[in-house]
Image (cartoon, rainbow, N blue to C red; front, side, top):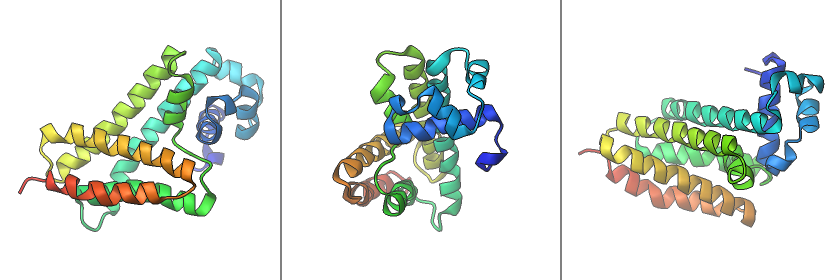
Length: 196
């Protein structure tokens, strides 16, 4: 769905997530969100009576659902559905973005977790739910590729935590080395988990 096809509430949630990707929770000020979403400022109070905490929690939830849905699209596009290829696709999303747009953006869920999760229960819960949904989606994909159920959850946690760490290193170093290294080194371990 294009941004222009979203309603004002959806545009504000999406805009908050995009601002958080680049500048953390502080960058997602209510006024900035309204401007970016091309929404009347007064509509923020209407749609988000819980204020910025509610908006941040909903933006984190949106990001978690987005990441979860991407897993199925990655799997569908794989020429050979194996765990290493799924992880490589997850990594490639970031290497392509950083190659085209620079290293300014990261994961909005990670940004909210670092910035706000300790002080706001709704943000921490939203981040936990978002990472949980993403982990489940990756785990289900791994099971579909022949990874035993009991290995799918630990491996999906490893994949997501490795990816998030590599994103942080890439942004700090202004280099995709950490991402490409993670894909190359983790791939064989992931594929070794597939049932013979």
